[in-house]
Image (cartoon, rainbow, N blue to C red; front, side, top):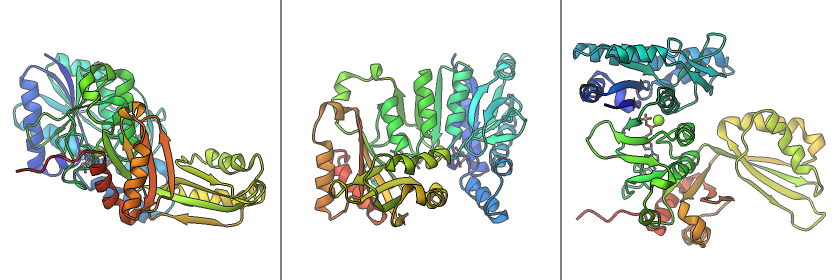
Length: 412
Ligand code: ADP
Ligand code: ASP
Ligand code: MG
């Protein structure tokens, strides 16, 4: 007998027929003698629809009320799954975030502070199945909080850690983690096992198959995580610690995967004074506003001459960032402020990069050969990212995937 968390994403929950298929999977695990908690997402497209309604109600909507609205999608699917499971003769009940409770702080991208498991323990003792809405928690004030887009993955891992589950299975609309988004590159290959560290990097640079925070949490708690298909019985991808990857596997490819992120906006400041404190004067107010700056490039033509600084922020933070910079114009002393949202960040990730030179050079040459202009670059120990014009997204992902030897063999 094992204790498991099964999480089902939006496509898997989209409609009663699919919910029945989900229920059949849950039934199978429960009847095998396992203690099962199920975490569900809203039906595909529902959260987008709810977000849009908030925007229509008021451009600058209140985040507390946004949470009240968007958390409702998961309430519907958890109730529907519990009803379906009951219809199959199973002892299942839904428990909202406030009923466990899942304690969270902050609105719209709230953080899980802790999860009380007494209610769940009683459910398991009574041989029951708990169905829990993902993406939501409750604040100290008793208000509903949501955990940021894609947050049901984090709910699932946090719940698994709190209830000391043996594993957390993430069921989605693809049958595992691929070397890149299989919807963009049909020749992407399924990865059997990937380290937490690599998955964390891939997720943080745009592989939205798992919310980044869920991977960080699984890594910190050592929770075995598997990404599987809701629709087919296939093995899936296991996300594990470094120590569980065979030496031979690690040597397999220098690059594990390619990801892209269109959610980046580029800002360029011209005519900056070439003096100590300029960069600090730019970024300090942005930090105060809570803006996450990602890539940064500064160029100083000659010492003493005005310089140019380019950096990126999430598209949603662009308006705030420009406003904060304009306010600080006197202190910073820049000439022009230019913005561009038609950009994409493309990244290559792999632990093999630590021991192999030339990964960045391959990226630059591959893109240059296709006439793709690089606007900014960042690197870390296991990642190289470039910012390029958005129109080239698919081409860049595809050619880099081939250049790093990741393409699957064509089917005979
Ligand atoms: P869910 O609703 O189940 O949480 P998501 O849409 O959040 O599903 O995540 C699954 C999607 O992630 C896939 O449909 C796929 O298009 C996308 N994706 C992006 N990068 C990858 C990757 N490297 N491997 C697999 N899927 C990926
Ligand atoms: N329904 C939420 C979203 O679409 C949370 C999730 O599905 O993970 O972002
Ligand atoms: Mg998701």
